[in-house]
Amino acid sequence: MAAPDASAAKPLLGLRILTIEQFGAGPYGTLYLADLGAEVIKVEHGEAGGDAARHGGPYLLGDNDSLYFQGWHTNKKSVTLDLKSEDGQMAFRKLVRDADAVVNNLRGDQAAKLGLEYAALKDVNPCVVCGHISAYGRDNERAGRPGYDFLMQAEAGLMSMTGDPDGDPARFGPSIIDFMTGMTLTVGLLSAVLRARETGVGGDVDTSLFEVALHQLNYSATWYLNTGFKATRQKRSSHLSATPSQTYRAKDGWIFVMCMTEKFWRAMAEEIGRPDLLQDSRFATMRLRTEHRAELTELLDAVFETRTMEHWVERLGGLIPIGPVYDVDRALDSPFVERIGMISDVPHPELPSMRLLSNPLRFNGERPTQKAGSALGADNDDILGS
Image 1: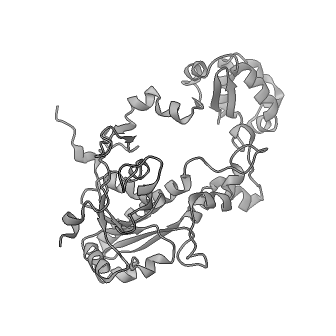
Image 2: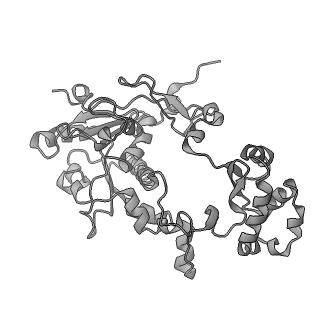
Image 3: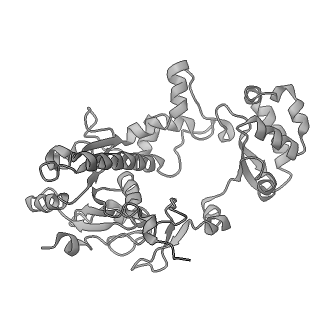
């Protein structure tokens, strides 16, 4: 049998992307492009120490690198240019000649000042696509404002839906808006590149942290806009309208059960030895179960507390959607995570044993290979030449 073709998991080979990016949103989006085979060249300011994430502690890798940085930058190259200087602009525009796209996640008023818009680059390369991630957009009164993920969760209403109703406003743990904004830009960017290859004309593609955060309200926004329904935080991380869909106490921790259909509700009640619940008028429909959620929670807790998380997941896993509630260490140390190949060995000059999360995409069963992101300016000679 022929060996798997490594290039099959690199469908973007031949694509060249220039990035001027810091921290999360831009780097997360271009991480996918680089892992999938695109030549992603980070343009960094050498005298300023490059991307601020290179200095993100507490786990540093030499003078201008860190584990935090590597988590966003596998397979990327690095060149150092001062885009505020005449020489830096000249060198950058030469790189644009052969680029498919230029990506930045600067403040909304910076792209124009640094010549990163299509209007400034189309004379160099009419096919180039310019992707912009900003905090609030480039064409409104907030264009010059800096902004970060957690601020967006706050203003877009997401924190009002996260956490316990009796607790303080809470944000999602990881920087989920950064991640989602990076992926949103990537979809738009690749769509525009495909169009540019057909038409010979590039353009600008914009998104912002705030717009993406607001878009995550999804059906909660639809309900409010059309009925005035105001979504709020729910006890036990419950679904707004489906019950039982929440956390329950097991003997040694917590499990999350999601009976999103009548089929799952009936299967669970039978399997846990409580078929009588199916005859209880309080729980006859999804709406009634939601209205009587507190009573149902108490009844189901009494059942689930008798056995361990592992017992219930094993017993019910083939019948209904159910999962254990793990801490980060237990989640990453899970044998299942290892079996599916979601952790990769990615040697780094300062840490030969470095391990990172694998790319979650697979192509014909193969995951994209990863290598450590380049050191600051490591690719100057190869890319910039003289």
